[in-house]
Length: 95
Image (cartoon, rainbow, N blue to C red):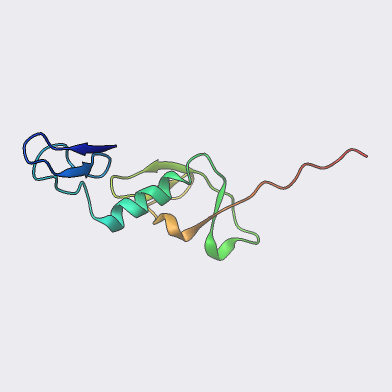
């Protein structure tokens, strides 16, 4: 939400800044973008980009402070941009 500092009058977005002067960023723009991308993977079935045709389906189990994700059944942390969301196939008709 956009706020105005009562001390200095500067406008800032409190979702991306500290809520007191001097309104320092919470983290770099790159880390914020990575975290936003990781949040978009929650609850979705994903695959590694290079295994989109026939790879194991995965799910995010946690997101770190900088947007790195842990994956169910895999060790370590991964950058969210190495995954593709697997779209569910359309339901079959019973005709």
